[in-house]
Length: 438
Image (cartoon, rainbow, N blue to C red):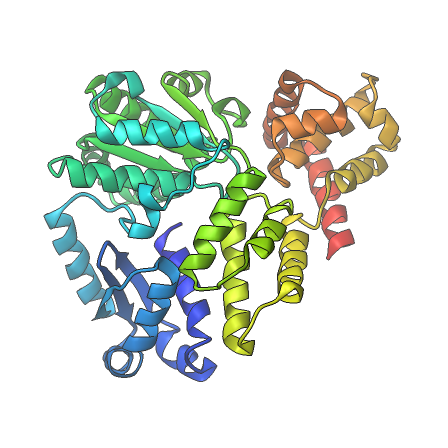
C-alpha cells in the first residue's frame, strides 16, 4: 500500500465525518506526504486550505487515522510544493528509511496461519540477523492482498528498531522505474545509482513491474549484483513466482531464485477466522463467534478483502446503530461478487472458442491443431494475467500440468509484443469478455 492508496482510504472515511462540499473545497488538492510511527504529514493546496484543515478538520482526520491504523497520530499540515520539498529534504537528510513504518504493519499485527507461516518465519529471521548470507536474497510471492507488503514493512520496522545504523530503502517496482526514468531525463543516473547501491537493506515491493522494461531491468540487475556481492540484504515481493513472470530474462530468473523462496497462499478458513476476529475487535464491531465463523466459512481470497468487508460493516453500524446477519450477508454478497472478477475462467474459454471457431471441449481436450492450441494458450494467458489465477488452478481447470501452463503464458506474452495476429486476438477476446459483464 502506498501513500496515494492510504490517502484515498482516508478521504473515503472522511466522507462519513464531514460534508462532501467541505471535502471537495478543502481536500481536493491535498495529499499525504508522509506517514510514520507517530505522525501523518499532509500538504494542502494553499494557505487558506491549510488553516481551515488545522482549525476545523484536525479532529476528524485524527479520528479517521485512528480507525484505519488503530493508533493515534500527530498531524502536520504543509502548504504548497516549497514546504513539501523542504520537509522531504529534511527527512531524507535525517534518515534513509522511508518504509511505511506504522504499527498496523508490524510483526505483532501479522496474523499467522498455515498459508503464510513460512514467509512469516523467514521474514522474522532476516529481521533478527540481516547480515546472515544464508537468507539472502529473499523472494516472497503470492496473490494480491495476502500480506506481502505487510511483511516487507514489518522487516523494515524491526531492522530499523534493532539496527538503527542500517540504511534501509523500501520502494515498489513501478516507483523504481519512475525514479530511473526521471534520473535519465535529468541526467542524474549516477545519483540514482548511488542512492540504491549505498543501502544496507533493499526492500522492493511488486518487483514484477520491473520485468519487461529493458532499461529498468538492466539497472535493477546491476544494483542487485552490487548489493549481493557487498553482502547487503535484498528482499523482494511479487504477485507471482519468478518462473511465472512473462519475458523475465534468464539471468534475472537466476538471481531471483538464488536465495530463499517463500510463497503465501490464499488464507485458509482457520486463518480467515483469526483475521476476522482480530480486526473486528480493532474496529469495535463486537461480532459473535458464530458470525465470525460464518464469515470465515465463505471463499474469501485475501486479508485485504476481509478488511474491506469489516470496514463496510463498521460503516453500517455507524449509520444504523447495529449489524446483524442480514448486514453480513449483504456485505458478503457484494464483496464476493466483485472479487469473483465478474469474469470467470468459463467466460474466457467461451470467448476464445468463439474467436477461433472451435468448441470449448476442444480447448480442454488434447488436440494440438494450431487454432485449438492458440485458443487454449490464449485462454491460459488471460486466466493468469486478467484473473490472477494460480498456475495450479489454471492447470486443474484445463487438465494441464504446471510446466505446460508456464510455457503457454510466457509464449503468448512474448508473441503479444511481436505477433499482430495474436495481439489482435487477445484484444478482441478481452473486448468481448468485458462487453458481456459491463
